Image 1: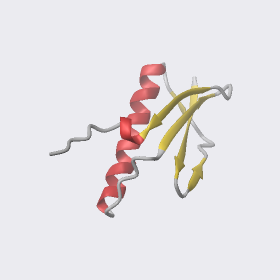
Image 2: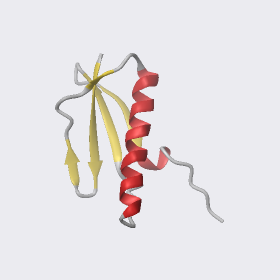
Image 3: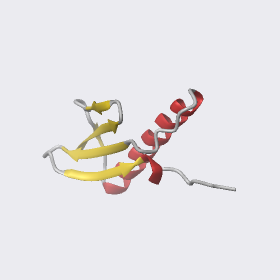
Image 4: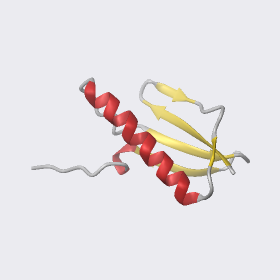
Length: 79
């Protein structure tokens, strides 16, 4: 099935028009987590942590299958 990974950030909303073929829900969660972590890493290099951003995943039928807040994609450790 094809899944579309949209990005909701404080700066706006980015729509995924292409999507990606994935086998199941586990693969969707893994792809969303990797995507969130990649964005977080890039933003961290600029001194920002976009932990309020969310990846919203819709299937090819337009049904929402996952909302992944970035804060759930990382382990927060505090001293």
